Image 1 (cartoon, one colour):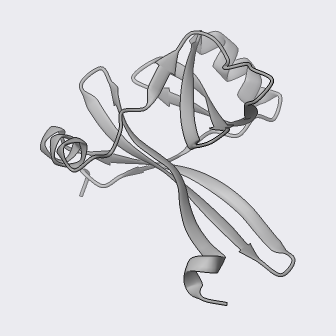
Image 2 (image 1 turned 120 degrees about the horizontal axis):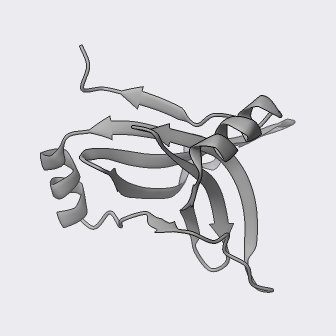
Length: 128
């Protein structure tokens, strides 16, 4: 078994929230009885976002509704809060593996977190 069989990248895209840019990466791990996926948002600069977009990384879909269809598997992942804006993040799988951010009210996001929903992991690599 190679490392590529154990750790892989699933959904990945660039999201812009106001004047902030993030690279969203889904890390998938599977070996023996260890299996998990983690979505990570990495804050990047505008120029880094442009370079990644020019290289073929897609923009994340931001919508106001949870994607629903008979041929699509949708899994809630986490809540992302940036600059007072809140999003429920979903992993959407059919022929492709995509992340979809659904805009939700900030109060609803905080309520979901209090009830046990995970907050998304955010790495701010621009601070330092």
